[in-house]
Image (tube, rainbow, N blue to C red; front, side, top):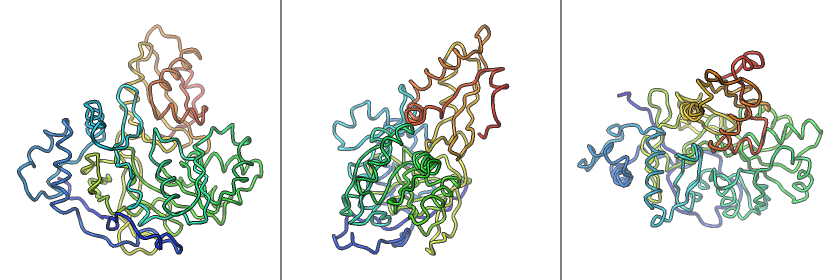
Length: 425
């Protein structure tokens, strides 16, 4: 077994007095840093995990160990965790758990779901990461609640900070012209959104010469800004502070950064223990309110520990790239194998290769390069039909297309060779 490196964020807090909500706001990574999860915490997490039927056999060898060590616990794949949670939900788990469920992706037949406590760990998150002040007015443009807890979390953080929130939700790019003036009229001082919405909004404003002078704070809820988007923020909002979360649909918010941090470097939260295992980021959630069995969960990202430019002496996590089967697209994490299997179910398709074109740019889009089955005609009709089938069945792609219809395309056989621009996987 690869010996893991590990770092844990600040000590979890159940709440804090009202005086703590005043400025100055803490910068990321300043809370105390406990060591690895204790044997008691791991024992509690393992007992909880065994309540999920699909994981019972996986953790059975550790059942009799009163003092388990983190390295004794085998890593947990995305497929294992996702199927275990979904099976448990179908057994009626929500009827007696008091949990909140979010659909992070997957297909209609097998969705990727997140189980978190109703609190969303908001008090613990805000103890280390506080992007809002009492006099702020937050324009919340995050995608709606059903697919990602970030929308609800930003509303909760605004309430805890004593700030006002306008829970607007994300709108489509063709609606920018209609709503921009109204957003300014709301008296907003901060905007929260996923990276794709931030990129599209600022690109539009830059092209038409519309300054977003009111946006003094930018909150990114899906693993930070790509280099192109970060540069766009610097050019169009030179005085704005940028605050970002890093997480996954299954493990929820893992780490955070702020204005003084490197763009792709994050400080783990106190209830999230992070390891590097064979280059891949693993996370273990240890919290009395935890619902999902996140134990050495393979996040699908490569990373390394590093020093952050904010000055915090403790190791921070630098994200490097997607790992293995994961395909990053407009802030979402797609399983390449899952997507290929979905398309191959269609009788007209012999094979398919998913690629991401113009990654990190305003024109980023997902392309499915199709090899039709014998007898199928590689024409526009076939491409449109396959595209519609995927949008209807794949949750994350359907959500992306709802906001940016041109972000997903299908090219078949000779048409793909003739039309395709260079692609980046």
